[in-house]
Amino acid sequence: MLARAHDPDAWRTLLATAVTDSAELLRRLELSQHPLAATLQPGPSFPVRVPEPYLACMRRGDPEDPLLRQVLALADEAHPVPGFSTDPLGEAGQNPLPGLLHKYRGRALLIAAGGCAVHCRYCFRRHFPYGENNPGRRGLEAALGYLAAHPDIREVILSGGDPLMLDDEALGWLVQRLEQIPHLTRLRIHTRFPVVIPQRLTPQLVALLAGTRLRSVVVLHVNHARELGTGVTAAVLPLRQAGIPLFNQAVLLKGVNDDLATLIDLCEQSFDAGIQPYYLHLLDRVAGAAHFEVPVAEARRLYEDLASGLPGYLLPRLVRERAGAPGKVVLAPRWEAL
Ligand SMILES: *Cc1c(COP(=O)(O)O)cnc(C)c1O
Ligand code: SF4
Image (tube, rainbow, N blue to C red):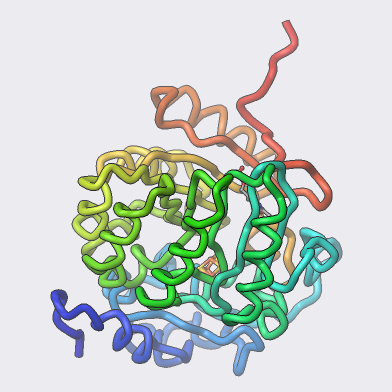
């Protein structure tokens, strides 16, 4: 049963009642008898987690559903594939403190919470040792000390996991502490919550982001236009009305969004919802996600078609992460030899 939308704690209920079993997921989608049921991975080490509002956007009886594909644990995940590792970004050696990543100039990424509202099977953090990096108050104090001691850091990125796993009170505490660090000017939140549990965007949260002296920016993670379905557009409206810029980063995923029409729809419909396309990521080569990979040559071809099919302001940058690089590696568009 869905909690009422105006209940400020509805999101907690939706988090607690998420579906955590692939077989149950297929049953709910009327796919139990489909051959897909024989390709599941029993008891995956990265558990299944699908909240009800996201499930409600999936099509009954469609084994190819692009939303289902992102969350279904297939037996394929357990097959080792050369080149796919548990720490593809080499992050293990990059955190100066547990829960803080300072890889790029001017920006530091704070892992504010260990968990997520949904478990995306392609996630590059699926093997990340959150146990050691879930900072808690004491860890956050240490991270705040680091930020205060590094005046070149202008922007703090709250990430995770998903930082909105923190409740409004805990976030309020953190934001208030960040505000006291004079050289910080921007607060960025990377979250998938609005897509999977739109109820998380409580009036209190919007007030927090709108009221801080820091310039708030919210980066969503939408991979398919159908994810904007029930409730997302309405849920982000108060953020838009508060003047908070909304961006989208997507991951290019085989079987989910690796065709031109789907990508065009994603960019156009994100924009219609007030969300500006920002990045289109190539998959990080993380163990368990090989079946999502789109070969680079194909990604380029798709991107070139996308670039000619969209106005420039709707075109995300095609990027990939590389261990040790000073920023995301931009594959396109880029400097053209004349
Ligand atoms: C992606 C990322 C950022 C932010 O990069 P932008 O290009 O500014 O969006 C910052 N720090 C880390 C560690 C990242 O992975
Ligand atoms: S919400 Fe983001 S961090 Fe969490 S599993 Fe999905 S992609 Fe990974």
